[in-house]
Image 1: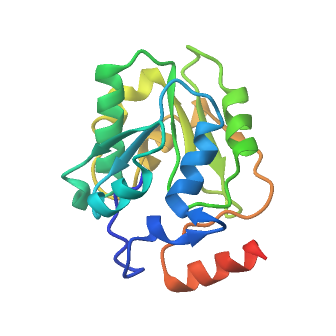
Image 2: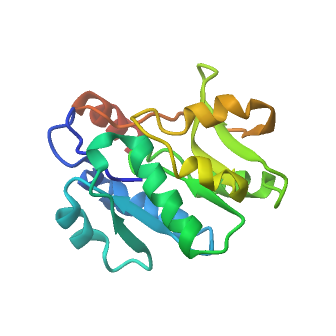
Image 3: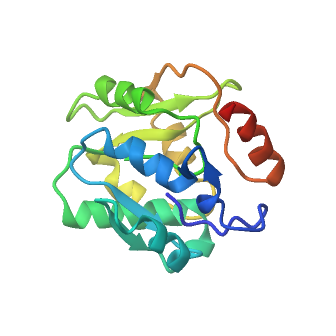
Amino acid sequence: MAAGSSSRMGEPKQLLQWKEVTLIEDVITKVLQLNTTKTIVVLGANEDKITSKIKSYPIEIIHNIEWKKGLGNSIAFGANRIHKNYQVDGVLIVLADQPLINTSYLKAMIDLFKVNKEQIIATKYKNGEMGVPVLFDKCYFEELSSIEGDKGAKEILRKYSNSVNTAKLEGDIFDIDTEEDYEKLKGFNR
């Protein structure tokens, strides 16, 4: 998911430098290392700028023209595309603005996943909340395809809390939403 306008940042945060690449390139590289069936990047705002930076990666880029409706709408857009066009066991949702998530953590989430068991593998934050990255069994595609608003898939996580398992996350996780967040992130790159 990389469809937001980065309004609090004032520039496309997906294109901020992180290590030797941009934030979005970093997350794409991590996801591609998982060797999953398909990697789909959902874009919205700043689509042209971002596409020009990532078009050489072996990914499918889709444009959500209704990205202003929020993260939930972009999740629904991506889930609907997957549900209609691919035969997969589940969907792993990863955000472009969480660069401290590493490939080994994403792999651990996938390793916890059991096909056709109606599982959800979520990330548990230090404050006890659950969220992204999150892996949904294919049985949730219909509900994922109808999410609205900016709360993402949190309502589905609450509704099916008995089906949610969490992967153990070592270290910090935070979203890059503001210039202050970005400055804090730079401290992790020393």
